[in-house]
Image 1 (cartoon, rainbow, N blue to C red):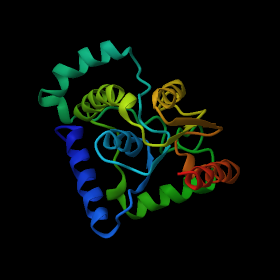
Image 2 (cartoon, rainbow, N blue to C red; image 1 turned 120 degrees about the vertical axis):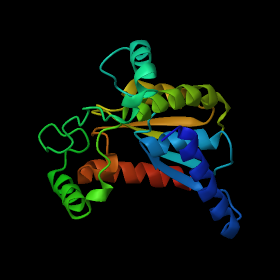
Image 3 (spheres, rainbow, N blue to C red; image 1 turned 180 degrees about the vertical axis):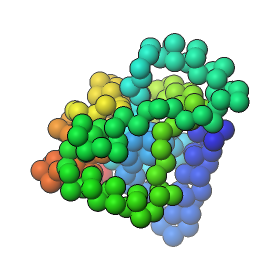
Image 4 (cartoon, rainbow, N blue to C red; image 1 turned 90 degrees about the vertical axis):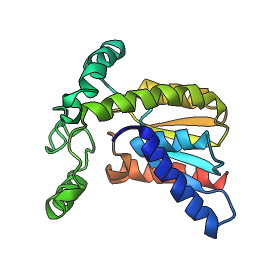
Length: 209
C-alpha cells in the first residue's frame, strides 16, 4: 500500500457507483479506518450524514508521535517497509481483548477467521503505519471544512483510538456531535446493552438528517 490516497480513490469509485442509481446523497456509516476515510471523503463529496464508531482520528502509540515519525520514515521507505509490527494487542485472546467484552461475539468472530483465514489482516506493516499517521495529519487539516452532520461514537475502553482525540474531532467539526459509550474498540461487536444504546443513538441521528 503506497498511500491512503489509494483507499480514497476506491471510496470515490463506490460513491460514484451509488450515485448512478440514487440521486440523494448517501448516509455513511464507518468504523475505525473506515470512519477515518469517511471523514476524509466528506471533505471532497457531499454526504447526508456521517455515523462513525471509533473512527481512526489518532492512534495510541508506544512512543511520542514525533519520535514514531522519525523512526518510521527511514524504515518504512526501505526494505523493512513491509515488515509487520508486533502489535496484535491480544486480539486473538478473550481475556483483556481490545475489541470486545462480549465472549459470544468474540468466539463467533474467531470462528469466522478460522473458516475464512484470508479475512484476517494481522498486525499493520511499517509502511501502513507511516501512511496512516500521514493521513491522520491531513485529516485534521480538513476537519474544520467538513460541514456534514456527523456523530462520533467513542468507546471509553478503546486501547486503539484515543478517546480524547475522538471528542476533540467532534468538537472541531462544524456540525459534529460526540457520544461516549462504555465498551471497547468494536462497538458493533459489543455486549447487547452497549449495542442497544449505540443503535438507539444511531436511529435518533438518522431521523434528524
